[in-house]
Image (cartoon, rainbow, N blue to C red; front, side):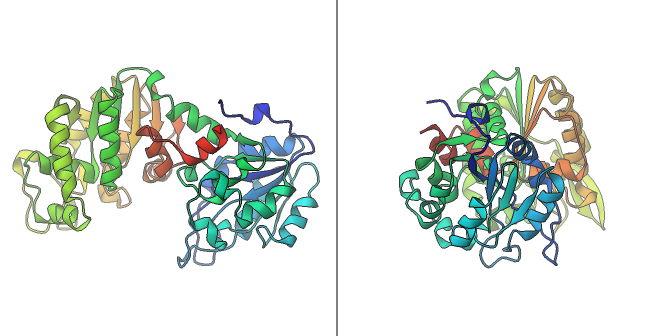
Length: 399
């Protein structure tokens, strides 16, 4: 069954539960430090409100016990500024007060309901049918005519606010969800040759992407960067020095070296490793060719070097499609930002370019790089789609 979108929804005068993902960095005073995730949903929300919908917004912020586990008042205030429609805030999620706030909405008005994670069952995984029987869904669904899921970044979770409502009321994909499914779910239709630039520090997830895209014939070339590249270099019997090797071990990634060795043995002609790396020496960036490794005692690989960036750039420019997943180094430190910035800027020159979520999207925001064809809002969800796994939120809408 195809997934219904906003094109299939008669909006005027209907009360809609809309799940968005606005989990954002906060300042010490609880205010929003970055509103990028809110901006991503403006198209969906503006359309629903302009078409006369009565919008009840469901979202989460932080994790229990964390410094950013806060209420959604600042998010509601910021959305009220961003949208050409009134946005109120309710400090309840599904209680009688919350339902009254929803029932009192007029056409073209919205209310942000309280952080769904203030409710314990939101931290549990359920089948859609069982999620539809939880307190959150059971109490709130009767007040809704339909449900719209625009929270792609949380689509890999089976929590009540994500998968429960479509079992009780008609479900639709918002514009963010629709775009993500169309792009990430149809990589095989993008221009060839396809180059995946795989980096970052989440090695098991990234290795799963490498393995999947090579097995499925989606990748003509995989360029490795970041800690992922370090793991492949170790698998290729490169002496990175104790500091880099110890980091891989301390993160529990030692078994991934064997996995990388297997991938090199089977797909080595399509996997490219760095030819030079950057370390910190006397407080400055120092680049070493791979054949000149190991570095001095205590020096760890922090970025790819200029020769690698140049070689990778040539591959990227000749690609029909480039998929970026993970930064090339410790881009938060300006000393080691060159590899990520230069490689990502080059990727915009490809015929078609896709940016995975998470740290990859954070890097392009930091460097203010524009020109990509698609920037995903999801980290884990994007990884799942790239590896061909089903997303619970998508399946709930499909079913």
